[in-house]
Picture 1 (spheres, rainbow, N blue to C red):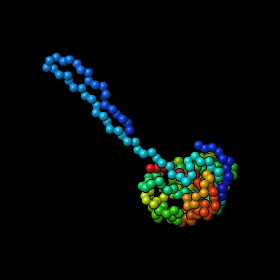
Picture 2 (spheres, one colour):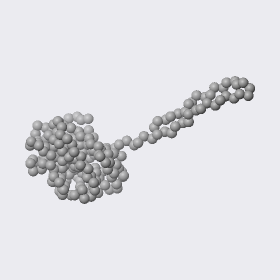
Picture 3 (tube, rainbow, N blue to C red):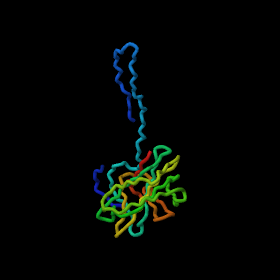
Picture 4 (cartoon, one colour):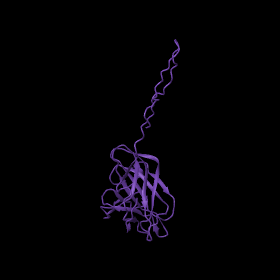
Length: 225
């Protein structure tokens, strides 16, 4: 894989109360009582669902300093992946997002590609994730070539149980001597970002930091609760 340096750019219950008015006292003819008036009973408060939380190894809105893409033609179709650890278990993931970069060089953010989303019980993604459980394949259609943030809702939510991590892998497909490139922000934590070194199973995941010495990490996030 190779990277291109970027010029930093700034990114970016309802309470329902009953009637509080009191009945007005009115003198009634002897032997005739006031007919009772109905008062709406208080309705219970409805709790709002908890807000979604965002998982990521770099901050949302960080300033990318690199576009990381494949060395063509040998690495066309390889996957750039991130493993994400939830703040607690169980944690249900409903959507993912990632940033693609465009430039005058080898990166075209508009090329159609796939994204794989699956669970991993280990720090390093499995060589054959399909043997460990379902793998969601999300197709992304071609679009204009420009820096873009892509948000995708999972067709089926993924629940992470104790010790499990989420893996989001973006396929770096190519066309006309250019390829998909994932944007990266300054950060260098090992055992979080990976390179597949293959276009299909079995993968040969390598650590972007420990094995390749990168000092920036993929802008890839997930959302859930």
